[in-house]
Image 1 (cartoon, rainbow, N blue to C red):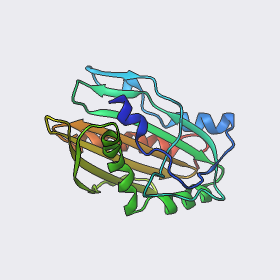
Image 2: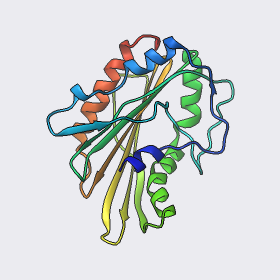
Image 3: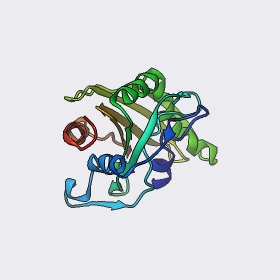
Image 4: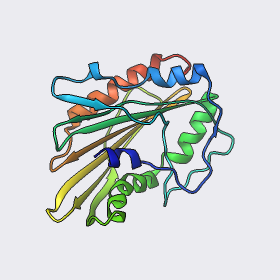
Length: 211
């Protein structure tokens, strides 16, 4: 499952934002992240590469021209049991709110669901049988300036297990964050996803460097 989380929203063919990370930008990105204390007993977490949001993929190339990323951070990969949910968060902070808004407008479109279902297609590239059965937007609201959510569903492997890949993208001020939530056989409840999005939104709205 960590493989799935690591390939989620992998970089596409278009040039992304310029990377000019600063200490302040990195700290601002870290301030939004989910941490172990946010989860109840039974959850565990493993370290992940410290990268920001990736909203471009094959089939959805997003131009980062004129946008500068000044900070990036990622939460641990959290998991609950062998079938999930599996949860991870990535945050990027940009030089200005205008740049963050520009990147959102370019990246967070209906075509972004192509990147979400791309997680399952990545398994097919490894020789695992995959059939995408559904993909589209999910209902989600927060208090932030920008909120969007997507789901891709597919049957995977010889046992035809059903995988649910959900991505919630949030934006406020200079920051954009993505939550990846994956479950096997049963979708993650809307209540859990809403709670996670609300928690992250509260941190984005008050975090340093995002106003």
